[in-house]
Image 1 (cartoon, rainbow, N blue to C red):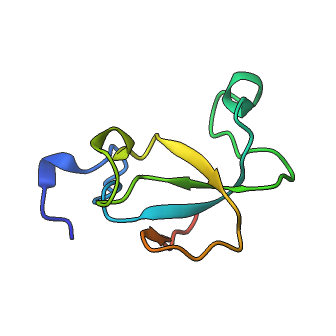
Image 2 (image 1 turned 45 degrees about the horizontal axis):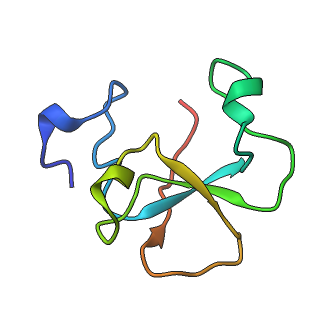
Amino acid sequence: MGSFEEGKSPYGIYDMAGNAWEWVFDWYDHDYYRKGAKKNPIGPAKGEGKVVRGGSWLYVPEFLRSAHRFDAQPTNRLFGYGFRCAKTP
């Protein structure tokens, strides 16, 4: 982890894509970015699926970006899903 100094994010975070799909706090809405807050959108207040991001080594390269997102049922436990612990700075 943290092997590629030039690949870290502007926030100094390493390895944001390719390891596992990461569950995030947000509920999923396909069109939320068109109608939600422009800065740090947190997603809708409720929904059917949660957002997963980042792609997994098991999927096609087009999905291996932290900006790529899709929805999954919060009860899913699938190979390639994971999470990242984070805190507010």
